[in-house]
Length: 264
Image 1 (cartoon, helix red, strand yellow):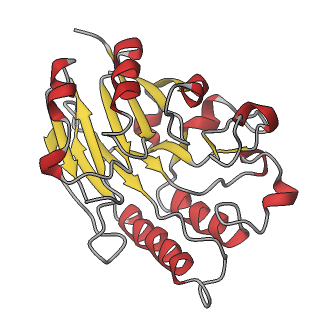
Image 2 (cartoon, helix red, strand yellow):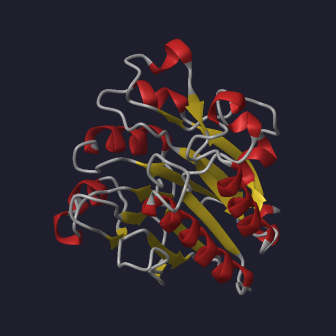
C-alpha cells in the first residue's frame, strides 16, 4: 500500500484517437488517478477495457458525442459524486468524485471562449465568463477538502504565456478572464499547485497550438491546465510535474499532462 497519491489531469483531445499515448503514459508514469478532458465520446463507446487492462478499474464518465466530455479513471477506490452543469446547457464539462480519504476531486473542462474577447459579438466568450462565475458561486459555498483540476482555458499570470504583451488581448489571457479566474481562486483561498511548486516567473506551459509544425521551434506555450487545492489538501502536496515530452509523442494532444503527488 503506497503512502502517496498521484493525480494527473490531461486534456486528451479525443481519448479514442489518442489511446496509444494514454496507455503509454499510464505504463510509464503509473499515476493513481487520471482526469481526462475533451474525451469526445459517449459513455457507451468509452474504451474502458484498455484502462481496466492496465489496472484502472474505477471509471467515472460524463461523455458527449464528438465534443467535450470528461472522465476520472482510477486504480484506487473512488465514489461517484457530481456532474455540475456550469455551462447551463447540458454540455459534459464536469465530473466529481470522493477519494478514499474523503477529499473531493472535481475535474472540469472550462469552455475555450471563441476567438473574440467580447461577449456582445461572441456569445461563446460570454458563456465562458458565466461558466467561471457559476464555478465561483459553487466554490464559495464549498466546505469539504477539495482538489479542483482540469483545463481551465485561462493562463492567469504574465509568465503563464510566451508573450504577455502579444497575448494580452487574446482569449485565454485577457484581463477580464484573469479577473474571473482570480475571483474563483479567492472565493475559497485555493492554492495553485503549479505555481506553488514552480513560482512565477518560471516558465510553466501546458499547451501549444497545432498551428506550429514544431512546437519547440518558437515555444509559444500557455499554461491553460491547472490543479488547485483547498489549503488543507494543499498542505499534503509533495510535488507538481508537467510532462512536456508528451507534446512530442506520436499523434499528441495540444495539451500535456500535469501531475501532483499528495501525501496520504
